[in-house]
Length: 210
Image (cartoon, rainbow, N blue to C red; front, side, top):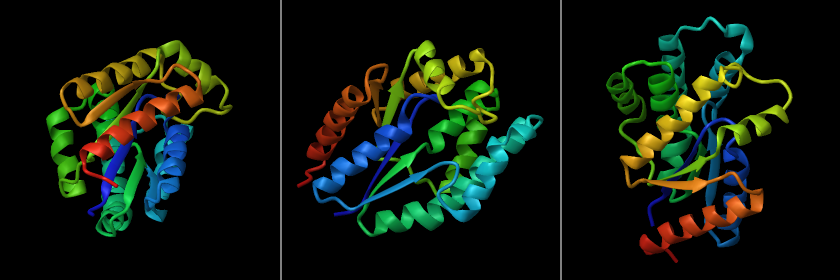
């Protein structure tokens, strides 16, 4: 069976990293080969770019510079990690992917979305997720979670309006594509996990999985 590509999207503080790890444990217990990864990052080159992107010292980074750095990291990520894992028949779980660029750099930074989409296609070779889990949280929940993290990165330090634009941008993308499954993620870790499992299992069943 060919591999499956599942991405987690959502605003900072939505719980993507936690829910991805829990889903990986569930799938492995079912006997699936799973590869977990993240953006930006996932490769040595991508991790170096991640450090530049998230460093608060780079507060003056231009929006186009930011977008192109994300794209460069993504191109390497697909070539080095995602595409080979899919070719081996693995389920790839990625904490963020191309939708984040459309939302963060397009909606929130106000760069032309059609241009970002074209560069994304070039960077990824047109590789799209089979399923995208969008974890949606109210703004006060997101801020409460981020407050418990300690030091914030460059993106987390953006104003409240920026983060609300991100949330609304993701919801707009989800409404326009049946690839998305929107999960209300205000609740406990285990409550959200149960929703994620139900959504993914339903997707796998539709795909004729074991």
